[in-house]
Image 1 (cartoon, rainbow, N blue to C red):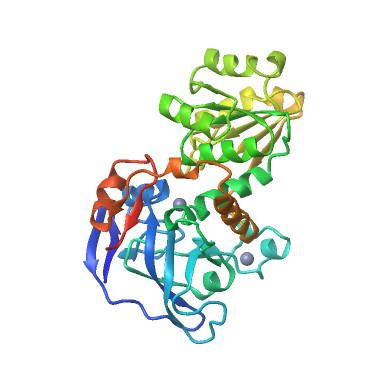
Image 2 (image 1 turned 60 degrees about the vertical axis):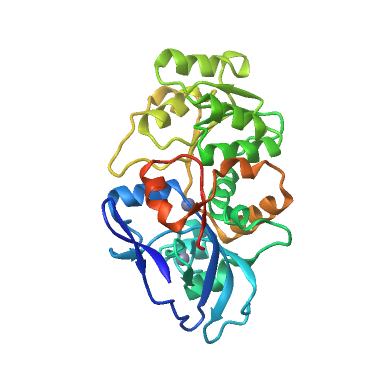
Amino acid sequence: MRALVLHGPDDVRLEEAPVPEPGPGEVVLRVTRALTCATDAKMLRQGTHPALPAPPAPFGHEACGVVAAVGPGVATVREGDAVVVANSAPCGDCPPCLRGRPSLCEDITYLSGAYAEYLRVPARITGRNMLPLPEGLRPELAAMVEPLACAVRGIERVEAGAGDEVVVLGGGVQGTLITGLLAGRGCRVTLCDPHPSRRDRGLRFGATAAMNAPRDPAAIAAVRDAHGGGRGPDAVVEAVGRPEAWEAAVAIARPGGEVLLYGGCAPGTTVTLPTFPLHYGELSVRGTYHHTPAAVRGALELLHAGGAPFGALLGAEVTLDEVPAILRGGSGDKRPVRMD
Ligand SMILES: [Zn+2]
Ligand SMILES: [Zn+2]
């Protein structure tokens, strides 16, 4: 089969590889569609990922496929079943899992190898996070289950509800998904992004307003002043992943409001926060990471229900050999990847 293999920083190669064989509890999928992801673009720049095998390593983590072979002990799916997989599964046994916080699992199993004609799915993901492709859902939309599950998990940590004002910083794929989910909850969402096309897309996902990205103190104050009668919005979700945006998020929220720090920043980065709004303003500041099996199921239901124009996040389809150039181009639209 043909597979993209990650060899190191900016070194990914399209190679011939043996079709994987499923071990106990595993399945092998014939990949119908994979999706590119900003995480893969970052992995290509860095040449590896701390949570994944050292290079040369299989590459890609968002996929939809048809079961081509099942290993011993697999009873949940059969050859020929169309399925979608999440990119990980928690162990279920470690202290965070037992406390009901599977996104913090200390022994999480990750998936990699979606950029290939065939993908071996580890037993734990087969058992916990492989779901039947819902009737009528296009494979490239179903493959969005992982990014959407992260957004579903993220907004579980936001209390703002119907009628509340929420500012979302960042109109990339994640900020747009979060905008759609919060709008679906009845929040009045203002999406902030420097690109007019992304602001327009946010409005199509249900934002009630869109503003430029606030990148200096005057612009940050203007976003705050535009909400809550000048006090600031009830909640701010940061979906940029830069320390200065984290700091802006805290500066924009109203006293008593909440801040969700969603975007992952580069390793080793730090932020400086003013103590007064945190203390006298009783701000609630939370982080969020990854997703949970419940969020994966919720995300697939949302994709099937089609409550938001999810397809607007997908660019034109590409073939496997075009993926490296797409990833080097940075984090634009998600691109469905065809294997034939
Ligand atoms: Zn992803
Ligand atoms: Zn665990």
